[in-house]
Length: 204
Image (spheres, rainbow, N blue to C red):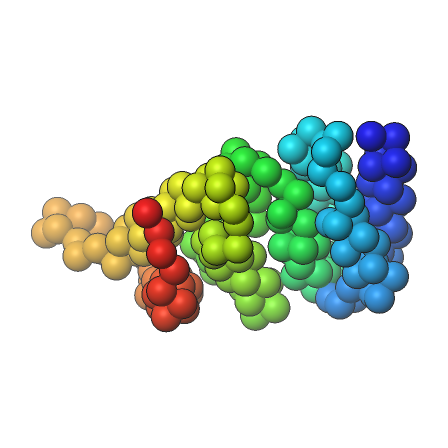
């Protein structure tokens, strides 16, 4: 456990150095990628199902990409250009974040605001889509792990369909005119649904 905590501390330190940089860098350095892969491969025997990792990552997201920082005079463009790289971090470490609740946090913090909204960059939308598709792809697990990932996939595909239906609903006569962004968002959500459908995963 101490080895894991030291490894986590080193990883978070490296991430802080990357995202604290004033120069936008949407790509992850080779050093960061190596640290991420090394941490991901660490033995899970003494781990707390990724609880401490989740806490550290949420703190990092809040520090560099939270609303408070965006309103505090920091350069929002720099944040936007690095957010895609942070999403990639979450995708790489996803196997360490066990349980639907942890992934639900990232759905609310990252995926939903980007894919079920407008104003994000193309790189952010691509990264959010890849993260969500990774969550939905439950193949490759074994036993209880595969069963749990399948249940998680069902949960998030239902959330995705609900969002799509909300954006494509036919207004009633008494409804106000639908928001002009609905078509744009519906297309983003449809793109994810089509890509997911083409993979034809077996969700039970």
